[in-house]
Amino acid sequence: LGLSGALRDRLQALQERTGVQIDFSVAGQARDLTTEEVDALFRIAEEALTNVERHPGARRVRVRLEYAADQTELTIQDDGWGFDPAIVDPDHTGLAGMQERAAMVGATITASGSPGRGTEIWCSLPR
Image (cartoon, rainbow, N blue to C red):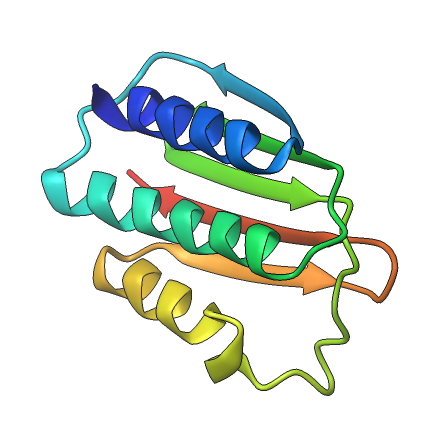
């Protein structure tokens, strides 16, 4: 399936289970990613989507996969309850696991959010 196909399947299953509206887009030409890179990016997305399901409130999730000459970017945004990074223990939100997976393949990851304004996970894998 490749990364985009695997993400599409995961997103469809999430939408069917929860009724959350999913917007998925892919930009650029797919790059030759290693198995480890594909697995890391997919698992990062999967953890972010698990958090969407675990912490209700989201009505819409936007996922963007962008292949550029110098990097592959993955962005997951939701309009759920969000979080306050100053008071959330990263070990309880899956952020630590996402950061570990990103580090294993040399990617950068950031998580941002604010109460009532949703969450965004952004991951960049340099080429």
